[in-house]
Amino acid sequence: MIVLKFGGTSVGSSSAIRRVGSIIQERLERQPFVVVSAVGGVTDRLFELRDLCLEKQAWEDSFASLCGIHRTILEELELDVQLVDELLEELKGLLGELAAAGECTPRALDHLVSFGERMSSRLVAGHLQTLGIESCAVDAFDAGLVTDGRFQRARPLDDVNSRIQEACRSLTGVVVATGYIARDEEGNITTLGRGGSDYTASIFGAALGSEEIQIWTDVDGVMTADPRIVENARPLATLSFEEAAELAFYGARVIHPATMIPAVDQNIPIRVLNTHRPDFPGTLILADLAEDACGVKSITSKSHVSVVNVVAPRMLDQYGFLSRVADVFSRFEVVVDIIATSEVSIAFTTQGGGQLDSAIDGLKEFCRVDVYHDREQISVVGEDIRDRIGFASEVFDVLGELKVNVELISFGATRINLSFLVGEGQAADVVRGLHKRLFES
Ligand code: ADP
Ligand code: ASP
Ligand code: MG
Image (cartoon, rainbow, N blue to C red; front, side, top):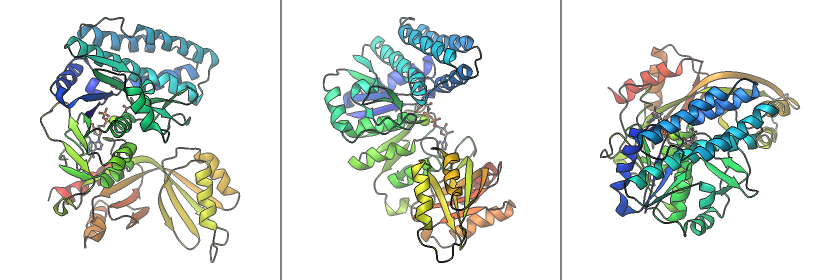
């Protein structure tokens, strides 16, 4: 069997869902298990509805347009327009409660945003049925996807594979499961974090012994840079799991960073494909690459990066200081990214997450802390770049030409990543400049 995951734009309209229908139909002999994201833009809208409720503003119009989006698709697909009415009613009730309370707990937020995928899965399964394909929409939590209770960033329980195998045994036909959402052991709805449907696909792929996990999206695969930033970006034929994980973690939105974890465990290849060009081979992500597939692969960037500069009162000869700092970050679940040290200070970058402000307060108890926000981080990723003579100088040459000041650098910690920090608003130009030098000359 294979797992096919379709992202928001791939299920974003009736014509997109028809395309998805034919992609599935052409692969029926491979026993597809389908995972879908919410209709494009719907998750963002659900977050906006949360904000409206918190600000005690009217949410009814925005809710009505959400209903309209789904009903239009149902009509155009000639499905029962009331197919998701029960879910819309439940959503409306929840919004009413949130607005009345003027608050939304992390638990309520995951319940709220779960409606996107719960509705899209019904649209896609409904369409497959009209094509004469036996199909059922299943909420991932009813298919065994049980996580810990960390709302907005839940992770599957250790025994998730057997739970999924058990729950899926009785399902017949093409299953269309919800991406992104799950449930904890108490029965609360959880989510895997934004963009988490890719991760859902690989969790199911690993549990069900998929021969390949296919991530269907709106571009030709993982590319040399984000095509929205670099016009001449081109798709990559292959990537290693490690390269893909680094690219994803360092900002390439095309695949969720955790997607590689279950796939690596079972050594299942992942393929990133374009719904608009189903015959294009896309990018194949696997464990080991041929030697000639090494070298610079892609340039990514992310913004809103914070730098936390920690100055020890007396760093000289101090041991145990780094571990005290690391302990604070781990206590407040702050994901640390680049680390650089000098004799008297340590600088960390982070995109926040966890409770950064509380962590900073914790650090201030034993050292001086300076924080700078809104930096932009750029990463160049590729197997063995660390060992390429002249590679780093080429990168810094480009920065010099662009007259961009580098604030922090990390190189050599892995064989495959060079990362550095620049000021706000500079990343796009640097990515374009580097792309020109590394891929277009
Ligand atoms: P989906 O809704 O299918 O999950 P996403 O919007 O999450 O799609 O991811 C696809 C987008 O990722 C592309 O449209 C592209 O703009 C962006 N992207 C960022 N970096 C890369 C990259 N290196 N290669 C391909 N796409 C990238
Ligand atoms: N719908 C969710 C989001 O927009 C999950 C996903 O698309 O993967 O983040
Ligand atoms: Mg995505």
